[in-house]
Length: 193
Image (cartoon, rainbow, N blue to C red):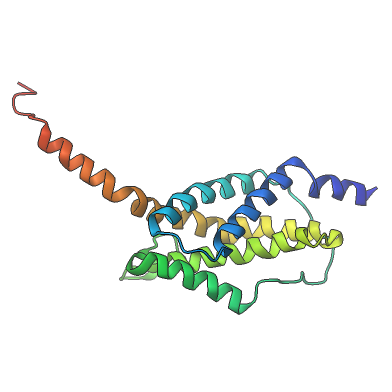
C-alpha cells in the first residue's frame, strides 16, 4: 500500500512537470554549442523562474531509506558548468549578495558568483534528475525529498539571488538607454504650472 502511495507521489503531475523543467535546465547547461551571452541570458531568465515555481508546487515527502543517495555530478561536471557560465558572464559574473548570514557581521560587501550559483543549482537538479532517468524507483522518493529540502534551505535562495543580476544584465542596458532617450525627448518644462 505504501509503495502504491509513493508511486502516486513520484509520478504525480506536479513532480513530472518539475522533472520536465529540470531536464530542460540540465540539457540547456550541458549543451556544447556556445551561445552569445544575450542568447544565454534570454533562456536562463525564463527557465530559472519556472524551475522555482515548479519546485514550490512539489508535494511534501518523507525520507524512506537511511542509505545516502547516489550522486551523479562529479567535480569535473560541476567545474565544466561553472567554467562555461563564468566565461559567458565574464567580469559580470560577480555580484553583491545581501541575503547571506555573513552580511550581518561584515563591514564590507559580500560578493557571490553567478557561475557558482548556477553550478550549485545544477548539481542538485542533475543528481535528482539522474535518479529519475535511471528509474531508481526505491530512491526516487528520497531524491524528491532531498531536492525539496535543498530547495527550501539552499538552492532556492541561490536561484532567487542569481535572478537579480541576470535580470539587470539582460534588461539593464536597454532599460536605461530607453529611459535616457525618453527624458531627452520629453520637454517637462511647464508641466506642473
